[in-house]
Length: 349
Image (cartoon, rainbow, N blue to C red; front, side):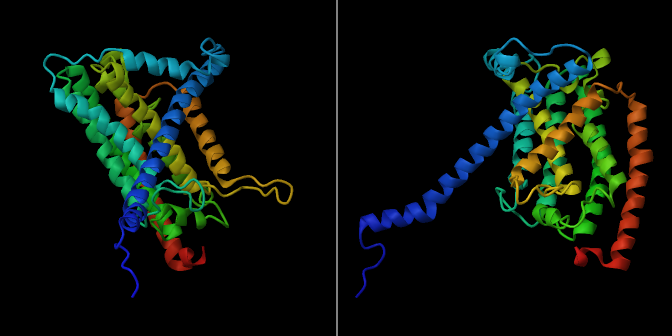
């Protein structure tokens, strides 16, 4: 008679390790690696922004801390970590501290479904776009909580501005995503990339790509749509009462969302990790390199826009979102739906 698998303590411990503990430790390790990569990318995005703006304005930018100023992000991080967080006397302490944690947590959680190469993704879920859309919709709560809990009129007004802005441009982004879904026939991000193996979606959806990029600027409160942080009338907007590490979480969340918008634009319109040209058989470029290169180019456009365009007025911001982007994106959804119906495009791609 064969021995049962739990007859000895050694075999029972091995079963527990293989079936329970080892997968959990593997998931924790992958999660920590993703979080560290995103944090390092955010840190050096701040360095790149200061350098690009310095080049545009004919300045040097960071050049003192480390060679070429490469250690400046770590100096900024140490300063914020050791700076005392000041909580206003009349603030709701629990909500005040939970707001930046929520904002940063949602920005990190979105990376769970972002594929950087074929099969290289933490969770390749079938409804990845719905997961991202749900997280982006929750992001506004962190801003509102921070502005309300600060017990400051300036912070509350900045939070209201930001909420209205994010909701307005999120509708346009939703219609853009509908166009992408119609052409790809899938909610899975990897399947959307595979659907662009013959032709990138930037060509049939060029107006939608422009709307997505501009709406991404507004969604992340970036210039020229940084109305919630307009220093001339609101000091610093919804985060005016934050300092130290709790302010750093808002800061990290904003820049992590910038990288996320650039990554989504790469997946939706520029073929994700797919190569635009082939170097075979002379050179084999890894797929993640193409993905990161496209993301970096789009992030450079984010920074370029900030150094080029002046800030919009609030009425101009609302008019652009509701009277221009919303009708145009809705018309393009109807146009793409007609193409899909008459030419059966998803089955061909």
